[in-house]
Amino acid sequence: MTTKKFMKAKQILLVMLLVGLSHYLTHADGLTNNPNLRSVRHGSYTYTWMVTNHVLIYVNPNEFWPGTWKEDTNGWRVQLCIYPQINNRFQDGVAYPLSTNLMLSVEWGSTVKNSGGGYYLTPNGKFAKFELRDAKGNIIFPNPNAGTNFLLYLIEGDTLGSSFSQKITYETNLPAWIAPLSGSLVSKFPKTISLNVYPYVKYYVLDKIRYKIMGEIGANTNLPPFPVGLLKLDEIYSVTNEGNYTLTVQPVLYKISDTNQTILNRVDLPSVTTKIHLLPNEQ
Image (cartoon, rainbow, N blue to C red):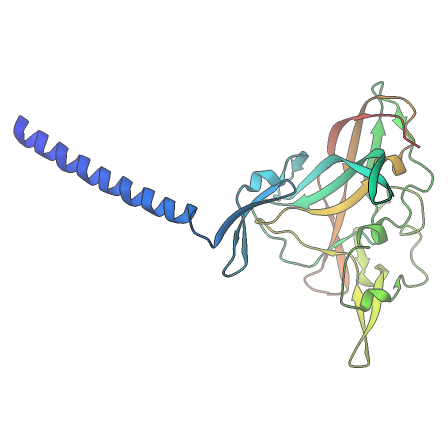
């Protein structure tokens, strides 16, 4: 190729690049100035809200996993997130801080798959392992009533129309290991259980009695992980010495059997350990 032809080809290529860049910038400017697109932050998450069709699109799924997490070979993750909760006393319309307590959110999800339904929390909301150790390796024992009504506490904010005006109840003659009122944080979970050990709500549709089983949970790859436990650490432990502690938590789920819709199989999730700095409990 002669020098003259080479320069001509170079000029053509440059024009094509400039046209392409101009088209890209025009498209990008259109997205930026599109009144139907709005970038918003909700808590720790950034998402784009499509005003016209009310579609919520998360911008950065990595924001879903800011805590300490572990993933198993099935792609399920368990995450421990610890954050402060500020309690206020209100007087004459003014909020006065009383104390700052640490909250623990135990979360379950995946970056590669959806759960597909049929998953349940444990029927008592307890864990396979829940252990706190101080810097010397000594176990810090929880308060005697720490694990009471774990599951009911977690689902308390759920809604089902007016049905939650009804009482959430358990069947009678439950197996001893369930013990919802037990203060223990942990249980030894059987490999299989029956659906009738779960709490339920009785409600009415067209004067007919219906039952809603409580504790169902799901996971989606494009949504934040779901909590399988939400606890106030100062209600779980009475800390008397400031210091660095090690917390280990292993949750368990149950999944409805593919062959029998009344039987659930245990799903052992990863055990996760995190470091936490604790102060003596504030009164």
